[in-house]
Length: 177
Image 1 (cartoon, one colour):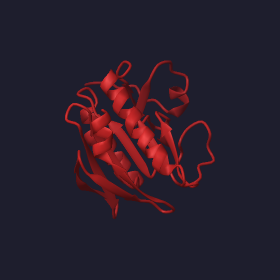
Image 2 (tube, rainbow, N blue to C red; image 1 turned 180 degrees about the vertical axis):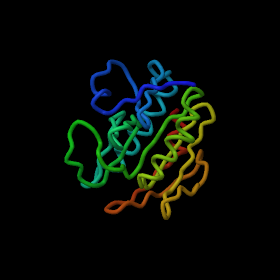
Image 3 (cartoon, rainbow, N blue to C red; image 1 turned 90 degrees about the vertical axis):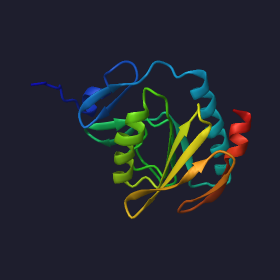
């Protein structure tokens, strides 16, 4: 029999280092991301920020805690919120868009565990970015289910949010990457 310790947000806020908390179980984040991870995240963040500049309703956050509940705190690579969140210390409502940069050490968590959590929480778009393959998978939440919109490398995609719509050119991102 295996015993697991169970943790809550009150425990999480006292830990040093980078962690995620999923259903009361702690997950260590990998050491500082490799250059490809950082470079792709920077390019994606810059591109979204540039497109959101004229949208007064949406804000982008890099690696900000998303407190789903007392037992689950995630740290998405990029979160975009288009509604007001009065909490300052963490994201307390489902982001409209979440981007995760997938590495071999995080693939299972990003593609399965977080996928289900984000889907159930009502995240509108979930993007999985694969630096080694130079592609981004986009999922759109339709009737509480993520539906794959496609794999994007050289394509543009239009994001339609409640108060803003904008297009991202993934070819431009990967040309600079």
